[in-house]
Length: 283
Image 1 (cartoon, helix red, strand yellow):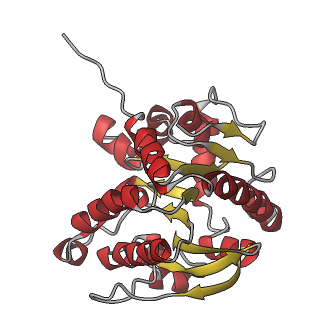
Image 2 (cartoon, one colour; image 1 turned 30 degrees about the horizontal axis):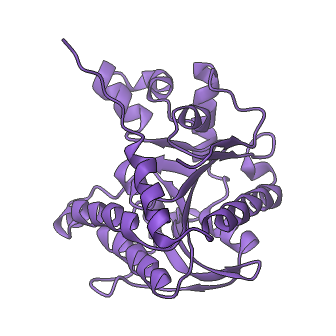
């Protein structure tokens, strides 16, 4: 399993419920850096590629080719947008099945040319509308998860804001999984969890603590490999500094992964995710 590191000294697994909830709010902040903010500052020569070659282009997924300090890479990312109009166009980062199929197309293209993949995750979840289900939302997510285990090039996934449910995991199978310090990653939103468990959405902060959805908890449980530090007050306070820290982390992990053979990389990736399973026998 990949080694785990903490870059942020301020992150503690024993945070209070209010501290956990504050991270949830920071992860969702309107001024939080988006995937496009990071792409502009970390990469050069970004060339966006469109369409899933089946139905349409989904603007909630950004995908393309770029350079990272002379290293050619492929990028797949959820994109929430910036202005309200842009957010509506991007569907607030909630991808349709064609978005996930576009991402998989780009990842397979990267594999063909031997390019590592950088995945930037920032979504409340996959779009739950009827039309998305009619076009195979569940199948598209499941296929991405399956095929990301098989892709022979290095994959580094980073949760930069919200990592919601299967919509996030569809871009989240990587050799290394990182989280920005004030990002969240969970199977369900705290509001939905509170409504199901207590029939009281007002208890969302309690649900957030129980879900253990913040970066410190997920590092402690071995779900992620590294926490990428943010400036005091969140990445939105100094986007350039946050971008530089993330850039350094990406370069480090890609340099560590590239010498591995595809067979070794595939085995380590599988062991990484298989090792996350925990169960108890009752009775």
